[in-house]
Image (cartoon, rainbow, N blue to C red; front, side):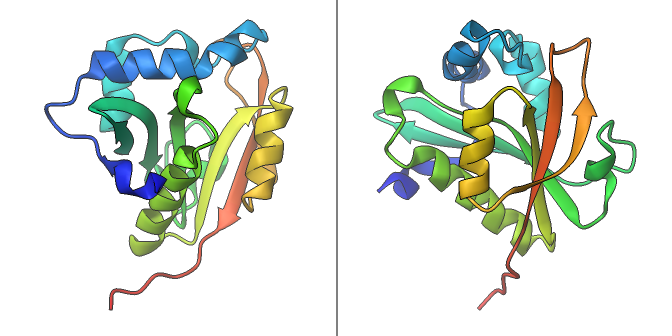
Length: 173
């Protein structure tokens, strides 16, 4: 099952490999004219984004095939919704195109939903391009609803929709 591949990013993992994975995962969006940061980010940007939160990866046959980073609230975040003390958010979420449809993305997302709930957050949020209607529909299928918008321009070339999902409380047994 896809969940068996999921682990935290480790010190020895290659950030160059992770950056390449993100470029491949976001290539179709770039080809559709959307300039997500992950379509062109440098290894240094990947390192910074990984350090801002907790990075999880999916590994298959010794290769990174998926990734996601969840981040705790920051009262100074540029996205006002991410400033709420009960709202964690995620980004840098992608799966290698050759490994889509195997449940890897959903397993990564379920892992960070559980981790955020365990840490006491009651919502998990994200932002994506308003033009990425297929992603918006997928997140809606997974229980996320649009709650706000944010304009990252000129860093990207689109308006973002902010989506959020209530998290079920998690208890340590």
